[in-house]
Image (cartoon, rainbow, N blue to C red):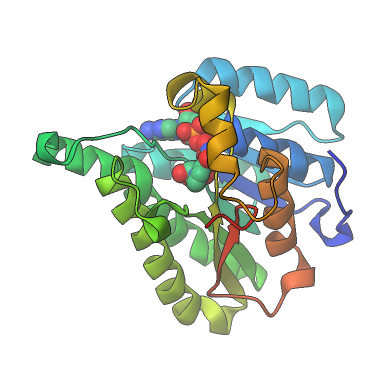
Length: 255
Ligand SMILES: NC(=O)c1ccc[n+]([C@@H]2O[C@H](COP(=O)([O-])OP(=O)(O)OC[C@H]3O[C@@H](n4cnc5c(N)ncnc54)[C@H](O)[C@@H]3O)[C@@H](O)[C@H]2O)c1
């Protein structure tokens, strides 16, 4: 991936949730490529260990992979404490983990509702809550929360996911106000259609559907995980030091 080099990111501690695959893996590679000290959490131990080994071989600092189920807030806190003990105060938190399981409105049970909010929003709140004191201690930081265009456009098969992704923007704006005086910036990224391996396998097995959806973009090219990572690098870097409380669409201008 061609990317701008942000000198300030070298040696910074960057924590990425859901970093083992998809866009999260692009974040791990991109921040490691900047010389940052990267830690990532994920429930997928196989993919996480493989990515950690791959990135360790290609970067000057091996990333720290901590397996963790983010639905369990005690586990999240324990994993974050391990990262803190090992690498020190976190400068950049990327709240990326999610699950866009399709749902039918009439079939969503209270348990499924709670699961969907848990996997898409609850950990975002508690990861940010745990990281703020570390960022205060180091005099600032950048929190990047992954939203989605799903809630802006109205996605009928994602009623709870879309609500969670909208909640992330509300939380982003609230948190940005409360921690701004500590020079902690909080922004969101809303990707458009990014065809990762998982997306292709589960939701877009058909090239024609992808091509049709792409005609709704102003720019017809595929939006890649690396495109999303470029925005994350910018928001993490000092080049964006006066930017906070924003949600950036990276979607090729999807209508
Ligand atoms: N791919 C897209 O087109 C798209 C579009 C809009 C928004 N987004 C958002 O961008 C982010 C990344 O998207 P993606 O497509 O790479 O997502 P993904 O579902 O492929 O990957 C998310 C990662 O989170 C991990 N994860 C899931 N549940 C977990 C849990 N309980 N504990 C720990 N880890 C868990 C997965 O193992 C995976 O590595 C997500 O927040 C997603 O909502 C993606």
